[in-house]
Image (spheres, rainbow, N blue to C red):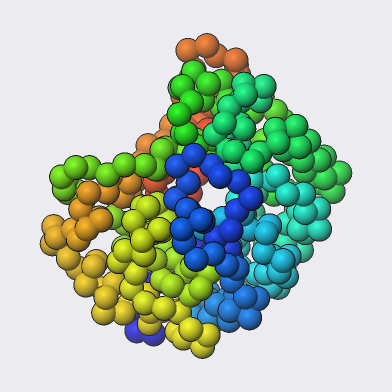
Length: 325
């Protein structure tokens, strides 16, 4: 393939349907066409990933709840059969024990399961931040998931994530410490709010998201430059093509449209909506140790800011710095 740019991760939207209506979610499912990626298309993409990008990780999730795709178990099995590392994010309000047991098994190449839960238990905010959630069911499902992990001796990481959806920072700090005190949770993720643009262009740095990090393929094959900007997700801004079964992924990831976008931004030219977007990833972030003022952990807490997320863990497990170059 010569000198073609290779993404570090391929993100595959297996569905943009969701059973919840979370505040500020980029997927406005009542105005966009909704659907599931076919198993045929998914397998074709994975075949090309294995052929053209050996060693690249896969994210079989973008917008929506992946457990709603009836073929999701077959999809994650196909990833594992082909030896591709991947991780899964779910709201865990749909109990799919067949999927979860496989993800935790030795046969699976999944390395982490992230459970989205945007509120401290018993605060009342889980159901406010994520309308449609039954907190009791969610917490019971998480307890069952952790029990399965313990019973089979799984080495997969399990994380919980809270996205900023209007909670005060006191609750978010309590959330981090609450879950780090649970021996079954490997790390806690805090996501920044993803709403609002600048009124005038203020971008100065290239966005590394589509520059050298991720290739995003939506459920219908549309190629998106990122999954953070609502204009990109809901209005299809700057889409650079359409994947069809049999296409070369690397040729698409290096086509004329996206190559020009990369060149322009390195010359300080940012097209709309990139020009007014403040979510762009443009650096290495921060890492180190932190201590909360009301320290309830009494152990070193390792911290990393990566893209728009912050990660807190009692284990020092960081990606190498060269990953972000």
